[in-house]
Image 1 (cartoon, rainbow, N blue to C red):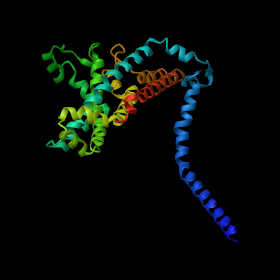
Image 2 (cartoon, one colour; image 1 turned 90 degrees about the vertical axis):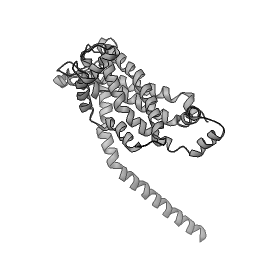
Image 3 (cartoon, rainbow, N blue to C red; image 1 turned 90 degrees about the horizontal axis):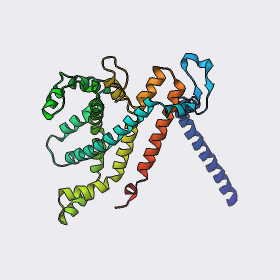
Image 4 (cartoon, one colour; image 1 turned 30 degrees about the vertical axis):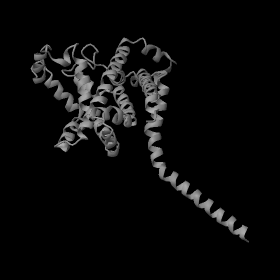
Length: 310
C-alpha cells in the first residue's frame, strides 16, 4: 500500500514537472519566434547569399558563384584599406579609452566635491546622438573652427580637419574615444564600488601609498571588468559606422573621404549593399567582419592575466 502511494506521488510530481517545463517553453515561444524571424533566419540567409552573385536590381538573375565574393574581397584595394583603417582604429581607440576610463573612474571613486556633476559631464557625450556629435565636430574642426584655430598654437596647420588626409582619421578616432569614455568609466566605477574598503585599509597599514594600491590592488581586482571593457571596446570599434560616415560625408563627399582614410569595414559593407546594391558581396564582407570579431575576442579571453587568481 505504501509503495502504491509512493508511485502515485511520483507520477503526480512527474506530471507537475512536465507542466512546468511546458509552461516555461510556452512563455519563451514569443521570444524564440522573434529571434528566429529577425536574427537567425536573416543570418542564415545572408550567409547563403554571400556565395551568390546577388543584387536587388536583378533578384531573379542571382546565381551561385561559390567563394568568388570572398576571393574578390581580398583583392579589392578599398576593402583592404578599410581593414587597415579599422585595425588602426582598434589599436588606438581601445587602449586609450580603457586607460582613461579606468583613471577617471578611480578619481571619481575618491572623495571629490561635485562628483555627480562630473559623472554627468563625462557620461553626457555617450548619450548624445552620434549624428549631432559628428555635426558639432565638423564645425569645431573646420578651417574657421575654434579648436582648429586653437591647435595652430601647438604646431598644427589651420585646415579643415575632416577634409585633410593627415588629420581626418585622427579626428574620427579622437571623437569616438571622447564619446565612449563615459560609458566605460561608469562600468569601472560600478566595479570599484564593489571592492571592500578593508582591502585598502590593510594596504595602508602595511605602508602602501595611493599609487601602489592602484597598481597592485585596484588593477588586479578589476581584471574581469577590464576584460569586459576590452571585449566590448573591440566589438564596438570593429562595427564603427555612424561617426566616420557623418564626418566623412560632409559636403556631399563620398563615404570614407578624404581618399578612403576614414573608411571602416562597416562603411565599406554599407556602400556595397545600399549604394551599389551588391548584396552578395556585402554579405561576404559582413561574415569576414564577424570572423575578425570572433577571433580577436577569443584571443583576448585566452590571455593568462584574466585567468590568474590574486
